[in-house]
Amino acid sequence: NNNGDSGGEDDNLLNERMPMCVGLCVLLAIVYVLSGTGTGQTGSMGHQQGGCPDLASLRNEALNSTPPYILECSEGEDGKSQEVCHLPATTRHAALKQKGATLWMTGCSGAGKTTIATALEDLIVKQYGKHVYRLDGDNLRTGLNRDLSFSAADRAESVRRTGELATLFSDAGVITLVGLISPYSKDRDDVRKRHLDQNIPFYEVFLDVPLDELKKRDPKGVYDKAAKGELLHLTCVDDPYEPPENPEIILPTHNMTLDQ
Image (cartoon, rainbow, N blue to C red; front, top):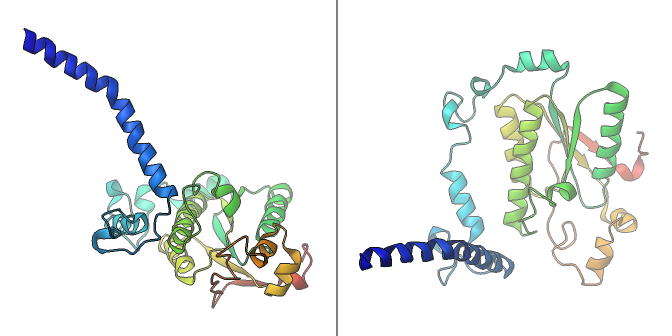
């Protein structure tokens, strides 16, 4: 009986301390991420030297080992229509009286992505009565992407997540306006492929503005901070931006009015 009582006390003690242990593990993970994950050299199996995991490599390994389609709908294999998993597009479009599409606006900070997307959303909703939603770096980084930094790997993940979200919105019949710097061509091309694989219209819109003009505008003050050395790794200044080779639309916004 004494042994039984002791076992019960041990179980109770374990149950009492379990939340604290879980909380401690979470806290340690947060401290690890904030301490500069991804800055060290990476070894095999997605780990940095010293045994600490490189989160970007682990994320890529997980993505590469997971099929990009719903397991319960395996008939819709990678590169094929996903309609086996959803209401047929024609039925949905007929009910909503509109089709979905993604307009992906890319360009340096200050090029006008948010300004144009906001004005376009307002126009299409109020004048044409269509269902439109705007996604941009600012509103996404307050929620879905708030765990991501501005490293190359995290920028790529930001584009991937936003692309998947835009795919879902557009598949649901929403006209989706994305305003994201999205500096790397491969990341944008991957998003385009995800759309095209599911027969969802995708239009890349390049806001082509010279750097000198961007520095004059500087609505967020980022170019001024970069010039003073207060902001490092600013895209289009000391981090690269790869312009689209064949965008559907090019907007030299420094030579255009908002209405144009």
